[in-house]
Amino acid sequence: MRRPLFALLFAAACLSTSPVARVQAYRAAVASGADVSPFLAPDARMWYDKKEGAGEPLSRGSGSYAHWDHYFGSKATLTDWQMKDGAVTAVVHETNGFYRLLEWEPAPYRMTWWLDGEARIRAALLTSLPGGGGKGRLAEFRAWAREHHPAELDYLMPNGHIDPKADRAERFAALLREWRSAVGLPPVVFTPGL
Image (cartoon, helix red, strand yellow):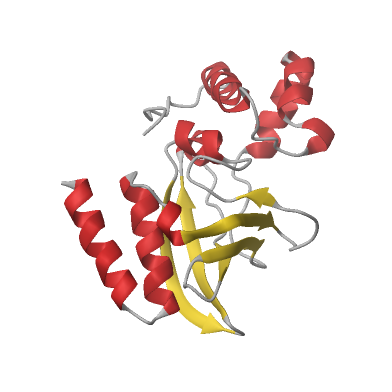
């Protein structure tokens, strides 16, 4: 069922002259697990917070958060689609198992995509939006982890910031579950990798 739906969306996006429709079709392809290469320019890049430096390759399953998002079952809803200054923008509302483990209501963020002359995405930028959200029980978790597992906390959050790379998703989930149990919070169930 996913492949026929993707084929229809891809065909519609190719026929459409709307850059917004093209990016929406790309997002549908990502969500369905389809091949996204037809939507991407060669050497498409992704940046976080500022469009500075070389950025990261933009392709299905690449980037700093690819494994993290897959492991924690990240789901995103995009709203407020616009064309602005030659780019497509949308506001992203995301949820995942990590946020649920911390009882964290994340603030939405903005995605911006730039397309090339062939309507392929050549660049993408994720930027935080001011205000909104909070960190849930992150401070409580960090205090507990600092006392009980300081070396593990330093590995998971080098320089005090979440690092999504390598095996940190699995290790973060294990430590968060241990913390929830130790402080008497109810378990949070999510299926890794969905």
